[in-house]
Image 1 (tube, helix red, strand yellow):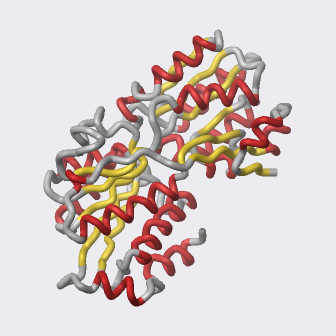
Image 2: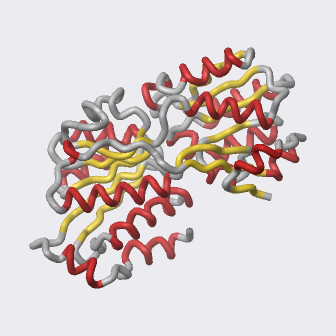
Image 3: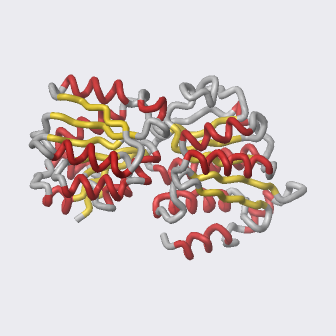
Length: 331
């Protein structure tokens, strides 16, 4: 989605009048903060946020009419997240959308009273955001992105599309990944042992470290790569995709946008659907419900995407079982 189209959606007045009238029962314009963990220019982030705004409009809330939305983009920078978290809290909004685990942590440090609804967070209990999934118990609730077992599923898919692999690294940023990586590692390591090859935990914090890990995997035949589901691997996907191609390393990912951008295979929750569902919680909170009473929800839609051009470049033949199961095949 082009930036011009996104701005038109965010600022448009496309909500139907009966729904808008229902929201006009409030006595004043409601204020909502949005703190995004990814880059403002990222197509996936723009698309997800547009879905969120459109769903709000369907529920009767239109930016510029009965709602004001304040946006901040942290571009994957933990320091920017904390700065923008304070800025948004100082605006005293009625609720805040928190995108990713480190963003939610930054907002939690700033307020224990303003309602926060998170998206693309994997382990809210382990991170201390909520007391439990059925009853969060505080000012934070939201929508889990993926459970720890998905790392094992990604590794299984890698073995299906690249059966000759002998050792696999899982790449992640310990400063941004859930539990500093520990949330996904047990599933990844257990799957590695079951397939009788070496699972490698590969913490990285910048592009140079990504390049070094992938180059090491590519020096010998049989190297493979799993991108841990976290915002860092999505923000840094261009360098991961490029290095995997240069070094002939089969790699699997967690978001379909990465497969569309040239990644071999992706499997994970539909993040657009998660943003859409988050809008329903904003509607309920703006109408008087408390986040403590709104259960944390799991993803309900998953997507498998395969890039045949990348598979061909790596000399891989995609099994028919994967092609049949795929939601999207990129040629």
